[in-house]
Length: 393
Image 1 (cartoon, rainbow, N blue to C red):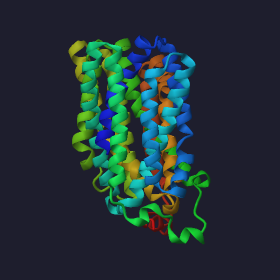
Image 2: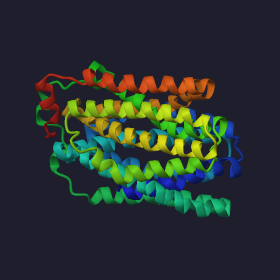
Image 3: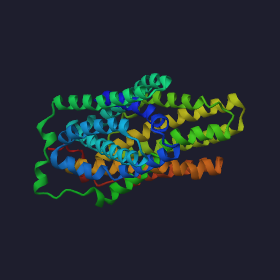
Image 4: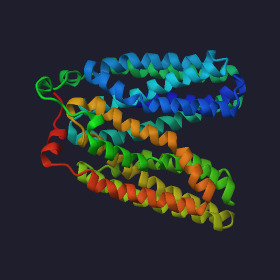
């Protein structure tokens, strides 16, 4: 399911911005404004969708959301105004972010606790491979540079949503996966929005998620504005990152099987992200070959940090959640990530773009502090830990 869906996403993401600017006629500024508005909407999608999943079942909800996502993607072919674009991109993003939270809750309910981190690592590897395959396929449409080619990519993305939904429909699930835990009727479960420890862990891990903005916004701008490295290095950085995730995410997740080990993984990952920031900063001081090698070295260290913080985040999001409300808790955690993705470009602008090497130093300190702070923040009484690891149902 993940492979089918992410191949489609790779097709769509690669052509969407160019389609909106060239075929629809929107300015880059308006496209960015719409994406920002959609990102804000996506932040608030996780919790209500997660709560709904807790009520009616994750699979039942995904069987409805999948076809709606397909319709939303096809809707781009009929957009002819800025207002219609903003409405559509907001709806599509709400569905997408909500579906992420619901799928996370489904994994939490159907896969045994001791296998969940490995399963998520495998899924992340597959998803990155899918995006690479989809993006490569979309290069054909970009080369043709036609309206029909872009619409074809959207149709294939819509088909991927329907294909993933069809696979979900025939997936054999234990009956418990679609039922609330029996004790939920008599024992009041924790509420994610009132669970201060969970909210703190979510916020700290969201800081580590700013690494995505470093990769997608900070590095391209830094290479162009401050180093002698060729712009082609931007693509090389993305290739390095994707390959390392595909090849080593499962290995990086080994031993990350409790809140304490997850927090320590995040602390190590935060240090590596901080080190990568310092390496990136040093790239401005060398000639072309040195700058290129330095940026790629930073990308390698950055990717290793990302592997650890991702593995740690999955375990923390599961271990510290009430198993009777996995949907809501996963919704909160995914909303934290979505907020980091929305605020990330602004953070990069205020640090790296505005202050250069000093900005990289600020980011390095931020990543280190957030990673180390997760160690005390994630500590919970043994009774809560054991309860959170108990399979639902």
